Length: 435
Ligand SMILES: *[C@@H]1O[C@H](CO)[C@@H](O)[C@H](O)[C@H]1NC(C)=O
Ligand SMILES: *[C@@H]1O[C@H](CO)[C@@H](O)[C@H](O)[C@H]1NC(C)=O
Ligand SMILES: *[C@@H]1O[C@H](CO)[C@@H](O)[C@H](O)[C@H]1NC(C)=O
Image (cartoon, rainbow, N blue to C red):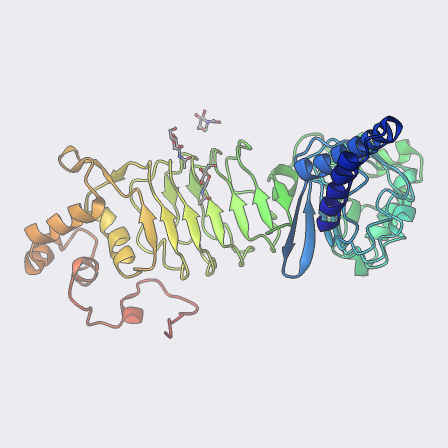
């Protein structure tokens, strides 16, 4: 960047000094060429450092090709969501340090065999959500370090031409390559994973392949995350399932995902253990889903979750225990839900009181009418003031809640029973905050 600025300066100064007509014209032409290349680069892409690595972010730029003039010493090149249709030989050969290359969500249907030559350090190559039908193993040979290869959501044509790729993907040491990629053609093989195909079938006549593998037509029963949602690896592993019309949490969420955006879907219920496979999850966005019910065990294993967005749903209260696993939670968005200010809401207030580090928003009563618009915590305070403890206990026995829990939930005093003993649910493990 500094070098380019210096060059520009020299050109400008040069132009001012040189008054002779011929020279000026020549300079102007050259200057314009460079200035526009520089400008295009500045406008289009963002260069930054993170953890000592150099990134060039050219996502969402409507690019149809890799442009000349991009810095060559970058470690990561982000080209997602552009309009690239083909990759010619040596497209990337000057990026000798490149470790990751993100080409997802383009319109790539053709990759020449030498497109990736020179990428001897490349570890991650993302080609999902494109229009690829066939590629061969030869394309991958220039990248000896390649470990992660994403190919899903391409209309793979499982014919003899794909044979070398399929065999390559099935080598046991290539276990992070091409997972979830599926055949779109021929119909007899549609929906089958490339990883699991019987490679011998590819080069046999199609009629035979269809006979050997009769497939009922139709969709998969359980929608899986990688074919329904967009996955991003940089800057943080993110699963973007925003507005996909989902009715349930998708299956097969990759274990490395740190953020999931499920906002604007139609998920009305969270069932037990929906997220057990994604233990590193830090942000979960379930905003605007019409959520009505969250099972007590829905958030099991989300120990590291920091941000939970449940805003704009149809929640009225939380079942006792829903939040118990969210040990590191820091923000909880609850606005736009019809919270009912009756006895059931006490668990939520009780939990929040015992987790003062959690910043929450939007906890406002919508019913009954006498408390409408009140902050829920004010309602609980009023409730406690109206009902001294001994009165509550004698009144409430027989409602299914024991007097001991009731005391625990509403008491302002330090609780005398150590918390593990108060816990109703058997737990496999318990974590104590040490500081
Ligand atoms: C969500 O699901 C409900 C019940 O199945 C349905 O009535 C509603 O139209 C759906 N909304 C959307 C946006 O799909
Ligand atoms: C969740 O998604 C909604 C809508 O897409 C957005 O407005 C909100 O900021 C998101 N919440 C978090 C915590 O990122
Ligand atoms: C919740 O819905 C309202 C109205 O539809 C909208 O204005 C608001 O932005 C939504 N909030 C989020 C976090 O999506």
